[in-house]
Image 1 (cartoon, helix red, strand yellow):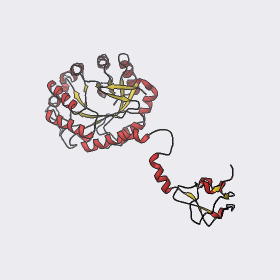
Image 2 (cartoon, rainbow, N blue to C red; image 1 turned 90 degrees about the vertical axis):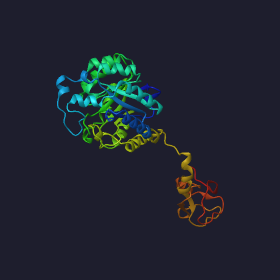
Image 3 (cartoon, rainbow, N blue to C red; image 1 turned 45 degrees about the vertical axis):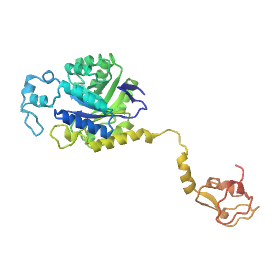
Image 4 (cartoon, helix red, strand yellow; image 1 turned 135 degrees about the vertical axis):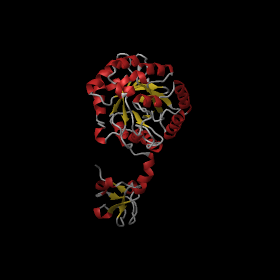
Length: 353
């Protein structure tokens, strides 16, 4: 399986699951909250934190900027003012990247426009994230791919043909692609997750990509299923409190839930183990205690021919296994065997197979 290195960590193949805490804009434009989220991501065991970098006037028309935006999650009277309030300053990113490194977390951010990608490159992020909204923004894909850093592609609100085209465009300039199955609804209904798309991606793209899953559903079950379908990189929105003001909090995981997700994901490859069925060393004492041995159902004198009524099976399992029952019946006792005594291999001359 394909592997990709991001910062000092390998993703894909038989490597441990790589889990991204998507802070996004849940910091509410506040560096203090952003640092608290980084702290909690570290507590939860995440491998990386991810933010979102936009140049507001580059991604919205004047009409879009001036559109009234009055709702419970609004941070401004217009959508443009709302977006501006949620944007961190460039110096904030340098501070937060350094802070994340101190917590042994990879620092990532999605770039929503060329200016943001250029800034993130100057910030020396180890990989770029292209959000689902820009999967069909082929000029941005080309611009980003030419930076020669791993690219995480989210595929929400896209068709299969659009995904194929995006992978084709990026792979012309960059071979390190992480392809994320995603459904862009918040929160996402379970029936809309379409996790089997991961198998379709695997069939179509094979070794060209590392598979991942970016989820917005409630609970922590879906990523575990996604792992079994081939995903090795996982992204979930992350918040301090799902009741906080903002549009993404309701579809986010709080620290303890995220911690359970990381714990369970990291357990999966350990639990899968190997393909060979074998008796484990730590099973042997339990086997001896609970498994059965052939036992004398009555007194058996030396030289007697063993009959069915002379044998039964009881624990512990340190004697002759009941699997030899058919070879024991008709065999000869080589010593006196008291009633209810365990029979050992040297006590009976077994029939030959």
